[in-house]
Length: 125
Image (spheres, one colour):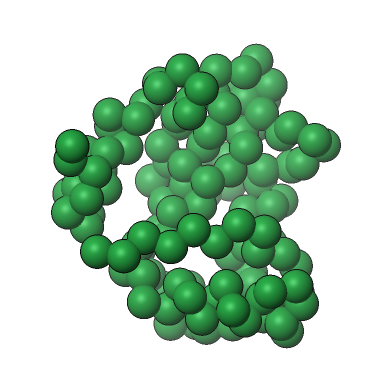
């Protein structure tokens, strides 16, 4: 399977703002979309608002792409600020699988690998 990393998808991407169309075209082949959000809200970001923006951009670009299986990878759960955003994220995206992880400490990574292996056959060492 192919894994594509789409950093910096921004508001207006569906109108080709930034590298919008290059990024969006790149993910058309993907079966599962993983949205990695900074659950600690570092640098003044709001992970819930950011995710809503991303979902909107994808829907505007391709309703077909928006229907693909997707999940949220809630990163930085080792930071105290994550306790504020994680419940909001879970409340806003009730029907979406959320994987709380910490890339820093490794927390949640085994469960995430297992999920990815079940979904797309990757993640096993």
